[in-house]
Amino acid sequence: MPAPDNAPVPVALPRPLSLFPLRTVLFPGGLLPLKVFEARYLDLMSHCLRSGDPFGVLCLKSGASAGPGGGPVVLEEVGVLARVDQVDAEQAGILRVNCTGLSRFRRQGPARQRDDDLWVCDAVAFPDDASRLPAATMFDTVQALQRAIASLRAQGVLPFAEPFRLDDAGWVANRWCELLPIGLAAKQKLMELEDPVIRLSLVDAYLRDKRVVV
Image 1 (cartoon, rainbow, N blue to C red):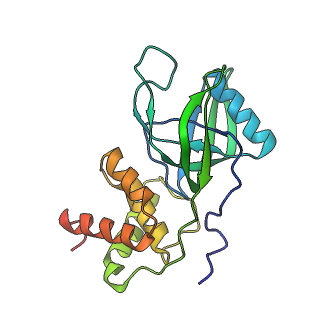
Image 2: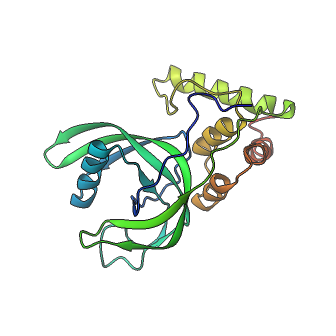
C-alpha cells in the first residue's frame, strides 16, 4: 500500500547535519515549538529558512546543551529531522519557531561541536514507517485517541498537525507516544522501533494496563 501523500518522506541529509539537542523525543509527524535565543541556534534557524535544510533533533541523555560547565554532553544515536515551518520574532534576539518532525536518522560516529558551539554529526536516514492499517484488536486504542483529540480541541488545544491519520498504525502510535506520561528513555525506544505495528501494540498494552483502554 503506498504511503499517504501527507506522510513524512525521507529527506536528503546535509553533511554534516546540524543538531539541536533537547530534553525531549521528537517523533515523525510531530509538532515542535521552540523558543530560540542562543546565537548558534538563531544562526541555524536563519540558515534553515534560507536553504530549506532540516536540522536534527537528538534527545540529550545527560550534560548541558548550553556550553561548558555542565558536564559532558551525551546524545542519543537516533533522532528525527525537523523542518522549520514558521518563525516569529517575539522580541529582539528571541524567535518563536514552529517545526515539524520528518524522517528518523542515525548518528554515524560521535557528535562534535564547531567553533561557534553548534553541534553537528554525520548521519544516515531511516526509511519512513510503512503505511499499515491498525489491527482490528487496536480499534479501541484508535478510538481513544480520536476521543482525546476531540477533548483537546474542545479545550482549544491541538497538539497534532491535521489531517489526522487514524487509519495509519505508525501515526496513531506516534501521537499516543507524544501524549503518554512515560520517561524519555521509553519514548526513545518506541521512536526507534522500525515496525509501526509493534510500536502501536506496545502502546496498546500500556493503555490497557493503565485502564485507559479496556
